[in-house]
Image 1 (spheres, rainbow, N blue to C red):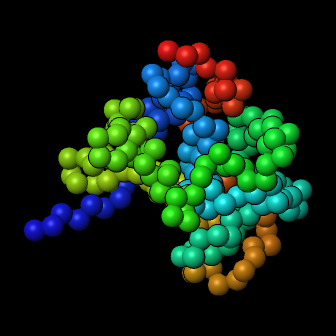
Image 2 (image 1 turned 180 degrees about the horizontal axis):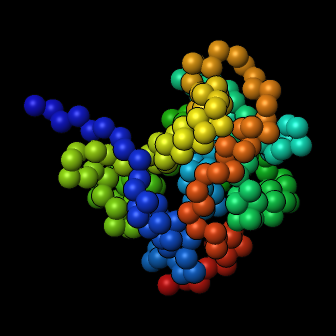
Length: 226
């Protein structure tokens, strides 16, 4: 009988481990070939609920101000709806503005400019780096987190969207707005194309729990070799 591998969110301890791993430390691992997206994509995924393909497609034009609030504009995933997701303030603390200035200095346009597409999709490269493939260990394995737990439940980069969903569901319902939850998740249950109260969306997003407040992109690019 074929075992069905359901996805699950990361536990609080696993999130702590992920965001205190070598990518977010001070020392590179042996033979590591660090890319800027290794630092940013797992963070944006956790704080925005976006799929890795959506993050891979983000350009500078997709960072927009709406009602004086900086937002990601996600609009490249066929299964879920386009949506504006306010940028969590901790991403600014992590050096997002400095990184954007760096992108511009390199005459690049995509936020994840050093993430190549494989067979037309960005998610394939992300999956291999994060979860491994064959004998190749991924970031999960290097953090001693199994791909499949004892109950047969699977963790992957998309598990971060489940962590986002858990928290946004609570905070949106506390704000008495199921519409905010459905909109931020890109669900069809929200029938309109826009959400007029960006301030409400921002209040929900800013309540997402900060996993590691000591991270910074400059620290990532100045890590010492092993």
